[in-house]
Amino acid sequence: MPILKAIKNRLHYEHKAVLIAGKELDARISDSFIKRMIGLMYEDNLPKSSCMLFVSRFSSTESMWMKGMRFSIDIIWLNDGKQIVAIEENVPPCRKILFCKTYKPDIPFKFVLELSAGFIKENRITKSSKIEFK
Image (cartoon, rainbow, N blue to C red; front, top):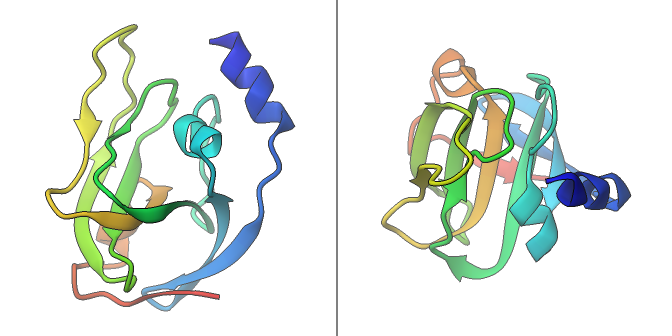
């Protein structure tokens, strides 16, 4: 998918601080269809001090997938009140050409945080953990 790689290189991302488990992370904001579709594809890693914050205009039930990913991540889904509705740990990259597994909660969500794999376990994140955006 060289076209997606070329598009990704031209995208501009805003950044926002996200507070979770007493840690402040630098969140790259994915707030458009193309940014949400590309996500962390083709990147070599995600520093522990960073995350990607997917923002939808409305509550959604869109699926996440790991196509084009090179590393595992943790995923947190949040509702419009920024309460955690679902957590998925150590989601592996999809190495297949077609039919990558998709991930989504049964509950509608508005925000998704993608974090470095192990963050949830290391910081004891649960559905009752508080998350703030600055």
